[in-house]
Image (cartoon, rainbow, N blue to C red; front, side, top):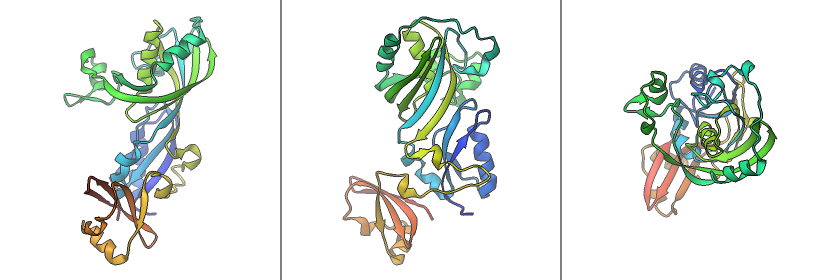
Length: 282
């Protein structure tokens, strides 16, 4: 098995993203394993992972849009904003009698760039501590959860069976779906929690690309970083690249480039205003 690469797993409900990474560290015999966007234990879906030196590419791949499908239950609330502290067998399914057009109107207000506060039960750090640790101890102040700019590109309502709304959303990096549930309910003057969450895609990563933990398949970089150009170089130039020498790239325009030598990707080159940021991959 190669010791570096990009792969995609489909995380089931009930295990953490951290546990998935732990099993991959053992499989690849390396500590260098990182995911491109965590999934909560109660969520399922596409989990892209970088291994070895390819972890250096994570900042470039996480910029892509993410597609989610979720179910929102209106009329009951949850501290965690999901079903973690809810007895699902006790749900009454009482109707809240929302007009579907009103739901659409409120959802439209979240499209584009918005300011969003992360959930209290999240991995955001507050003065060196995880927010969920403070929330469990009831020592987290609401003012500590600072709003940040995030983007929701679009949404599609799949079903409205009062009190459960099923929809798909496409959002950018850093967007908290549970926060959307909280804020949508607030604008509708109601309470709600996220009943289910599936991540269907992370940019080019889709369920059909996913490996299983038993059968791991590394993916081709050129299919994953669609905004890059590919540069073919000689073996002699490759040796210079490995030593951090970039002078022979001076005629290139600003952009992100994959550097290839004899069929292998050996580096990623990010050029901005003629400043060269080289990430070796071998």
